Image (tube, rainbow, N blue to C red; front, top):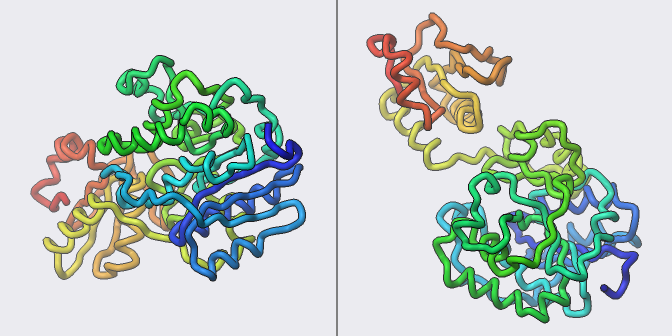
Length: 367
């Protein structure tokens, strides 16, 4: 399959909002792979970003930017991902059409890095299937395949797909998948759900190390990834990221032309509600404690320190997280110090936390 078996035909999709992360992924592959790579970049980019990406091209790492793409702007994006995804997320569905001269391609999401040689992945035999992929470590326990009425009891993560383009064309899989996305606007995972349904019975599952998602790392700290996939809301380009491979991502990014770009502090709707409640009840500021040093708690610590100096964070409390964060010791109970308010960032357990520390109600406000 394919016109040149000794060269990996890699496909990525991006836009101006995500291009720095695409460049980081490409830099990681450029540094780790043994055989030549031809990167097909499906993208709509500014001239400046096009130039930055093309500057990465070399004799053994050739880049082509493809802009003649189907119009997928009307395809529905679920509420869950409305703020995080754009039309670019759907362009991978057009790979069999765009790469019409090839019979095989490797697709990778741009929120990934590669830390080992992917030649063996490229050499996997897929003549009898449409795709080789890895199970989705977050959704696997939920038996999503049953809800989608699949015949095979698996659900794969579409961030890495080794694609049999010839079979996709023969079986009209691109058209089937796009049709499923259109017909099911309420599917939370949009085209990933559609791909799992359209490719039912046509997928070969690969070892987890070819697409190690965040949930997989949490469940199995001993796994040795070849491809790291930063799934979930928090990414390594967020200031608060504590993903085990955050530093590796940043090392690769520092060797791209996006090394001077600032890292982001991204707040979700619940974060903003907590901050708004705090500032409305204490317009002059005050001394506060924060219960919860998970993703939300870390974001709130940074936001308050950066934008609300009228508040002084005196204590962090968490029963599972130990050590310190941002120079503050993490306590396993509310310390015996004066606080105006206790902001509870562990929202799912808010009621039980308040019940546990109800004896403090008379002395401070719960946010």
